[in-house]
Length: 168
Image 1 (cartoon, one colour):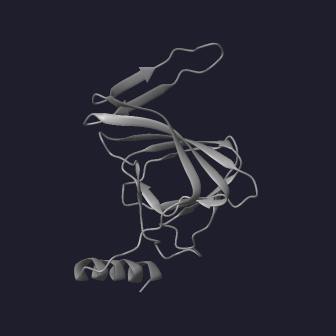
Image 2: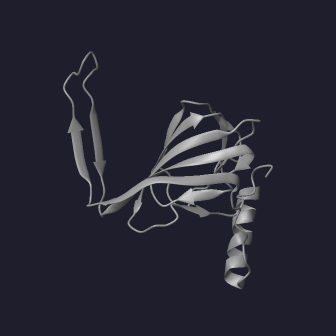
């Protein structure tokens, strides 16, 4: 049986027996909310014509219910980390400064992915997907994070237990 399945089984046994499974909270990071607003159910279908030497493009964004969209800056001190966590909806990130390293809870080898300044990523995994971001450098790093989530979800992330496939 794989280590991941064994840990999942242990978590299920703990849940059934009433034992507490510890989450992994963040350390060495701070959150600075910029804005949050509620939008009626989205049905955006944007199409552009050629615009100042740029090609045509399309963007679609749809939601079945009203959503909150929130943006914040997350600052990671040297050695700071997010803890294992998940999100209740899609997350759009941009590395404003520094370099961060992400670990995916679904990766059995827990291989790091480096996110340097200027890198961007859209996370669209389901809410049970866990990941962790760490600042493994000696300088401060900042993320600009935009969350699309159910109305009233606060905070926009949920601390999760260590999935057991990494060194942390």
